[in-house]
Image (cartoon, helix red, strand yellow):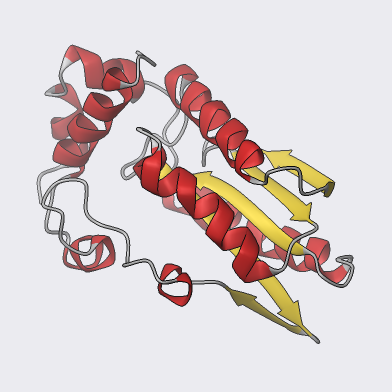
Length: 194
């Protein structure tokens, strides 16, 4: 895979406008993951019977996880996810951010699978939906669990580049960060967010 710094210098003008934010180093990403997991445990620890946790982040490869454009995309996807709740009450929410990208977590008065069904519509139908990570978590006793797309009859997420299974492409690093960033910028541009 090509060097990230060299890849960035070759980004199209459109992609450079998307991926112009601060650089998230590996320690930043690990800290964000730990903080997110702790917040998920804390929120689900306060969940009432019949509530689930919706965790919203962006699926953005490479070192630039936030920028003015990516924040607008995140706000649009968050708004769409809230609309997809179709009136279900949000009892508590918290927003975080920083170099690792924007995050929003909400305790929603819906069972986990029903919440996943509703928000998956955003992933499946909104032009920007493929850039969203709309994770739904529930709790059984002291055990937290995540609802997978396959549990509600949807296929695994598809790769933006080749339409293969996204996780397989990510694991094998089938596509360069540069190519992924260019594709993401194209999607965002099509939506009118650049």
